[in-house]
Image (cartoon, rainbow, N blue to C red; front, side, top):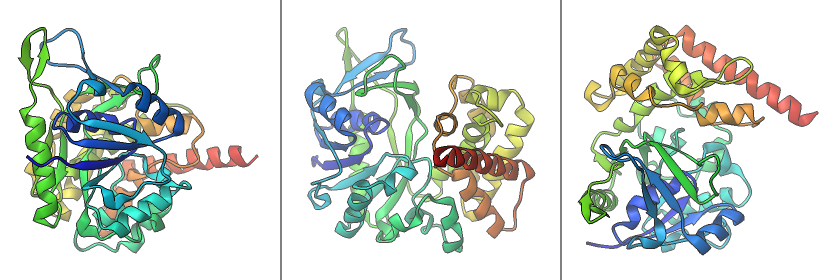
Length: 356
């Protein structure tokens, strides 16, 4: 099997995917903040993973895995040195100084790029036929950062696994709270898709030694032919993540879904139907019942809600993207419009406070 050099922009969520890739003996370079990079270079990183049927979580220590991990800032990285780039930061971060230039260099180096963001990069949306892409730009913090990309070299991986920094933990630790699979769409070029399939096989082959027993680990990479499969996340984001946001605070994803399950189902199914209208087959997507069951274990507010609560002037706006795409397809939902209006007003308040 070939070994690959992989560049991952974003170390917190990125370290989950990195931990799986390292099992295959590949090398991963994480782009992150200086303090995080120093810690990862000195001590590696840890991922705490729950495994079905076991009481204790498994600790994956990057230093004990076959691959090699390094970390550093955005400066001085040559994307052409890598076989694949993973985008694991939140969408507003791509316009920050240094990161923006690196992202543009990635596009110009024509390296295949896999996003594990909740907000699909605009070049990926361009792989969905029949939309007015310029009219979708207002959903992005700065749509121009994506200008240099060839859509055929960008794919999307549905970031279904849920993970957090442990409250008492260090910047190189990640606690997995929902160990589901990453579902990635193929690239346009078979040669690029082969990289994904090789990683999928490597991750499938992992058997981890725990007290002499070889066990299978959760969180796989699943490569799909359909470009619509990763859009399954959109329904979850609107019915759960964005509904964690309240007028003056936040609630857990579990409360967002289960305190008014009829409303959650209505929003979920509206987005589900939109994805089908775009070209998804119902079997590409996840039925509401399956999501609602998973949401029972989501005992924290989503990252978008936490960011708003912490005064962020920008967050990922998958809610707005879905609303704008729906409009183009002649679809509208009052509950979705209310979510978008609420997020708009909370962001407006944060920006005014920051400017004061």
